[in-house]
Image (cartoon, rainbow, N blue to C red; front, side):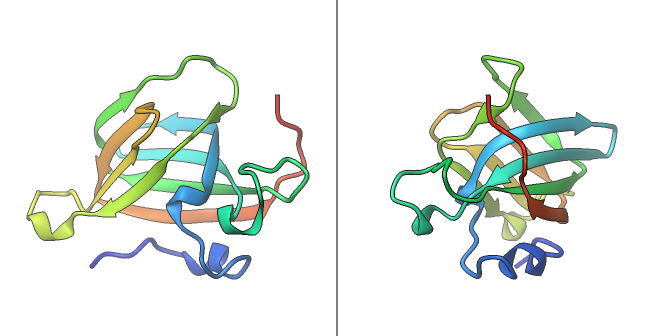
Length: 130
């Protein structure tokens, strides 16, 4: 099973971090071999209503190597809320250069496959939403 590189950087903040804790897409940059996305994340299990704007959010920057079959369906150009985000290990499928499937399973706003995923940075989000 392939792992998300540097996952310990977010697990040091909350140990049970899951991709479904990614609540918003703040920034997206795409180049030939990389897709970089900055998310806002919040532990769903630590709040009553998610996302809870009275609780801490964390800015989590991830890099996805060799993205393929990228599909975006954003309604607005501002910060974009995710309602059901997941990263699935598909390395056992034997697809060339594809180890992960990444998608918003409720909102169908983003979907792609990639070879590798790295968490580049994690920091407390100090901005405001909307």
